[in-house]
Length: 436
Length: 139
Image (cartoon, rainbow over all chains, first blue to last red):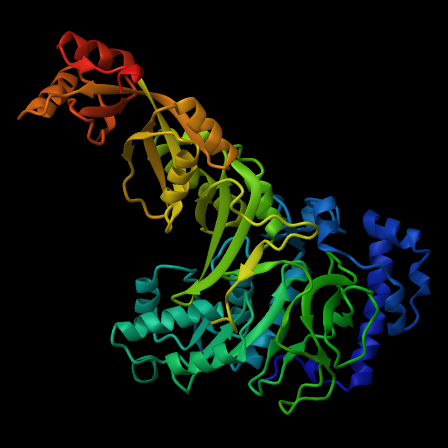
């Protein structure tokens, strides 16, 4: 099922919608958001300079750092009383990236999520278990609301507690699972360990995955674990843009359809910032159209992908983006949570007992990401007892947990054990291959 | 009162040897050593002939280390002597954090090295009970 007629319009009509909304958006941000107005003035651009979609290139980029510099709501375009929901995601440092929604924004968002739920094969008959962590993360409440829009029965399970997950899957006749792909693989293996054959014993038939990318090898694994009947698609979004709902795979599995009447995608060379032609690999830049609370123009997502404009066999005419092939920056996705090494560094520098050098190792154990941070002990007072060293480890873990929202492993080593770098340090080792 | 030096070592092949080789090169004698298994790292505790110089050499070579006071109690090798000493401490409600013994001392009685947070009282009750405490120069 195709949720909205805008998904199947001829390209000329899609572009006409985009241009009209783009002109409004540029006028809107210029009038209402000072940081945008300052940037536009500095670049000598006025709202009336936007005549065609090509003119979008004249607009300045918006960076993750703009959220930090204008924390918490300096980029908002409406009064607080218009906001009916806040969400937040990781910032590059201690402060999160806060996003807000007006009533119209929420409706737009959840309709866009409804579109990609339909792309993945969901219908009103589905019983959907949401195994994303609830909270300020946009994933859980986004899929929750989008699936309610199409009339599916939603179970707000949240993440963790595998036994309870499995009990609901069995007892409630769950047909649709929302999770990170790695958690879905972990859950599937736990189910098999309990002697349950998902193909015969469960009604599950659809997986809607997000929070992290699903590679083709992961999708193959998914079929081995859950059975060949399991239709698994992934979708794309980030909280700054609205959350999930930006793009999603249809069951043809040939890229993620972008909801182009709400988002204009561009691909740029992340170094030269030049716009690249369709089909070329580069950093995805997204302009949100018609967002009220938090308009966003030319947002540098940091995600590397390419765009395809040929219509799809599914009947949709919207542009498709390939599965994300990497990052233009050093952001890591750990269990679906975005982590910037700078966030970790900020915590470590506050702890006097350890030195300023550190290394981050990311591995996948039992399908789940494990992040180990190695730090150098420098304070000899801790050698009085193992208790003091253990207390230090526990304190580092707890400070990182509150900063990142993630459990980490800590490894203490002696001073000067870690490699020193001249120039740009390479502190992160990611051993995950194809997400497996 | 004697001094021990505690050294942070990672739990991997050769890490203890790195410490002992620094001491050997500096011609510092090891009188007693203690280390027990820990998953990732350990604290190696040593009584050496020259703690100040050992600290200097180990620090120079990048080891986190710390010199602190411990009690050395000489125990004649007879049945029940360790038990006797521990009973004195227990009666004094003194908690022993850890204890280890000297490597063989030629022709002399063994020494137990113990660490407590209640250092002065431990010395007091042991002395009062007639346990011989050793000083560094006697080692």
